[in-house]
Structure formats: C-alpha cells, structure tokens
Image (cartoon, rainbow over all chains, first blue to last red; front, top):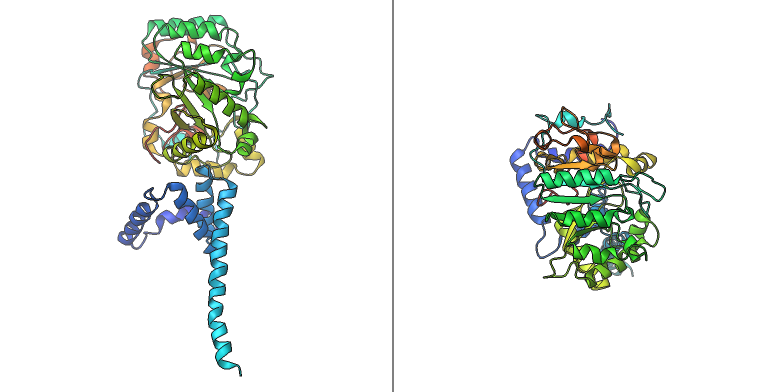
Length: 110
Length: 325
C-alpha cells in the first residue's frame, strides 16, 4: 500500500469515477459548473477553494489550488489573506463550540 | 536540451499519431540577434548585453526578398532587444512598405533610453504592432524574473506608448502584453488574466493595452536550469505532459511559421532555433535556399520541449491557441 497521501495520487483524482462512472461524471459536471466564472470571478473562486483546502487540511487540494492561484497571477499576500480568513473562521467555530462547554459548566457547577 | 527522459513521461513523439506537418506559412518570425539590455531569468534565448550574435544586413535583405516574393501575411520581429540592431529602422521601413501585419517584440524598458526613445514614434509611423513582456502585475514578482526595477520602467514605457496612441481605442496602434508564469507552474486562463491586467493597469497606473498573450515557460535555456537547480524539473514536465491537449497540437504556431535565426538558419520555431534544431526532413534550413512550397508542407522537428506549446489551452508567441483550457 505504501504511504498515505502520496503526491502522485493527485493525478489519480481524474479516476474517482472508477466503479461508479455515472456518479463520477455527475460530480465532475457539478464541479465544472460550480468553479466556472459567474457572479464571482475565477480568481475569487480559487481563493475560496484555497481557504477551504487549508481548513480541510487536504494536501491534494492545497497543492492543486496553490498552483492554480499562482497560474492566475494571484499574489502571495492575497493567498495568505484567504488562508487567514479560513483560519479565523475555524478559530471562531472552535470558540463558538465553547458555548456547549459553558452551558454544561453553568448547569453542573454549584 | 531535453530530448528524452527515460523514466517519468512519454516522449513527445509518442503523442503524435502522425508526424506534425506544416500547413502554409502565415508568419515569418525574424530573430535579429541575441543582444539585449536585460537578462531575464525566463528568457529562452538567454539574451543579454554580452551576446554578440547579430543578423547581418545580407540576411535581412534575404528576408525582405522572401517577403516580396511571397504573400506571407505576418512579419514578427524578435530578439534579444531588436532595437539594439543598428539596421532595424531601415528594416522596419522596408517591411512597412510591404503592407503586412508587422510586429516587434520589445522589452519596453529600452524605449526609455535616450538612444532608443525615438523608436516609439518610429513604430507608430510604420503602424508596428508592439508586444511587451510584463510577466506579473506585482512589481516584486516581475523584478525577480526580469531584474530589479524593471517593473516601474515598463509601466513608464507603456505610459509613453499610450501617449503616442498605442493601446488607445480608435488609434489603430496595437499594444499587446505578454504574461508568463514566474516559476514552475503553467499559466492560468488568458481571459481571466487579461481581465485582471486590464483592471489593475488602468486603476493603478492609468495604462491601457489591447490584448494579453499568455505564454507557457519552455523547459529550455535559463528556465530549464532553474527547474533543475530547484528540483522542479520532474514535476514541471509531468504537469506539461498531464496537460497535453491534442487540440492545441492541431493549432500549434509552428505549423504556420518559419523562424529565421540571426545567421540565416531556418527553424520551425524560436525554441528550436535556440536549441540548434534547424528545419529538417528534406525542407531547406537556410534563408538563402527558402522554398515556399517545400516549407509550407514540411514535417516539423519536434522534441519534448514541444509539450510546452501543447499543454492546456496551448501556447504560442501570440498567446493561447484555444479559447480556454
């Protein structure tokens, strides 16, 4: 089996329809529609994708979208800002969950 | 030169179902010499101030004779910095008299130098289409590729070209820009990059232009050295091979181009020229032996660097060959 998360496996993404070609095609069609320029530009969509890729800690996506951002001339500063938006959201999500903790503390403690 | 790579990807020739064939000659690309005032890291010609290769007037006259004898619609003059060729003003005048589409590829920076600033007016008078390299909208990034301080000088030169009417609606004077990636990755969609260039150049610098051409960096020359030195070579070649597009191959620029080197050697493209790959397969490889019919249907000399022009939306000296990747 080798290692998890091998870089060369990124190229295998095109084969995710194996064993289920119809669903694979539907996914790629959906992906293509979602990522093409619309009310948002291609640049904006790539920066969103990069932020999601880092928050989801997907090495394949980080590789793919960093390269695509570079390809569109998106600057290091723009990319890092997008990552910080993701980081801020993740931090906020963690802190928002402390509500559960605080509610339990308040209920249980005398 | 990368003619083979035994382990990681198929050679370009394996991608060809039939030999790549020319289908006419629409462009005579003339490289007047490798001397340049800049030494850009991505330059496949490896041009610079120390280069001594320069086209003789005799070769220029042979080019003119070819153009007079055949109705090749586009004359594409490149270098080095073409302006550093002492006979360029004469050559431009002769070319302009032929009433063809006439292009000059300039680094633009040279147009700010006292000795060469007259070229802006000369280009305008001869209705020359000016093509300027501007790899990135970030001054630091462009500086890393083309040399420190180049970005603001290009912007200043573009401003002067705009003042003379270049890139302005209704003037008929065409100013096109060239983008190429600043590292080991492929260019993004030309349409998206052009939108961004237009917006930023207008808003920040008041500069306008006609079209943006996106070029893929060829794995040859200084860029090949960079790929090897940074451990990016295998990844870059795999990216090119993975993006191979048969439709881009069909529209490859070499199929309608003949490239003339400073010494009169004929090649299928500027890249083959600097790799020392002259036209072959029975067609003439010297400007003195130019044969329109034979060259129009010649077999193209290919190598693994050809993956550079056939990846994604394709790459040519006039940008992507397909609408989108």
